[in-house]
Length: 288
Image 1 (cartoon, rainbow, N blue to C red):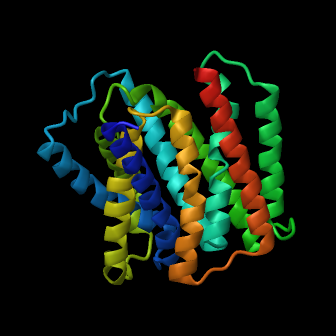
Image 2 (cartoon, helix red, strand yellow):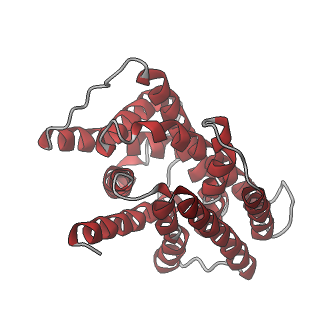
Image 3 (spheres, rainbow, N blue to C red):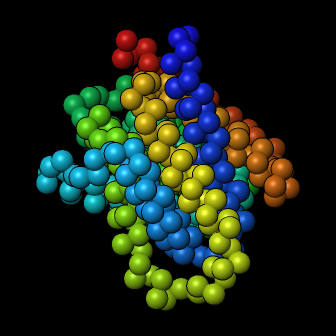
């Protein structure tokens, strides 16, 4: 592996670790999810703005035709983050992050709706495996059970994230990853601002250090590095590396929150991660 490629690989791995901190921080911060997400995006806007200025990146939207796509993807981003953090609050970090991690297969299943491609038998089988993995995650299918609610909300969050990813995929080459995140964070901040007039904001000062960590480490640095890495790797390669996110997240939850997943969570998690890796390898072989 060449030196530059090795640096990009380490950058992608580091981005994956930083993104994995969202589970622990989302579970720990004692605020309603809409408040957390607004603070997260609002603070990230400033960090990304000054970074763009320092790097002399063009923050302008290159075409008016991009506006609807960026706006819609921002709506999906806001919905994805809010539902993901509700999933964390309802269940635990392991269930929240594993249910969210169904998004690569959901993305593959939805992709034919966005581009001219056909679903393969393997993709349908992997989609079925994901359903099996999600089923194994839940202790019993009871809608009154908070863990079941958490998993279902997490899968819905994965759907929103998949839609956002598919919408943005065409913009990765046209815009710098930091610029994309800057616009996304600005849109999310504006969308959620009205909710702040109806939410309890009193705990914000005591939670500010963790909100800053979430905004800078997870969002501004982690997500930006990950988006930028798509320039140097195939999406399938990035997906394989991002398979480490649930593992990192569960380890961090054990260290900082003393959360120990049940056996069914390990089994369901292995099925989900296995399905994602197989789809990534299949996609990599298909694109060669």
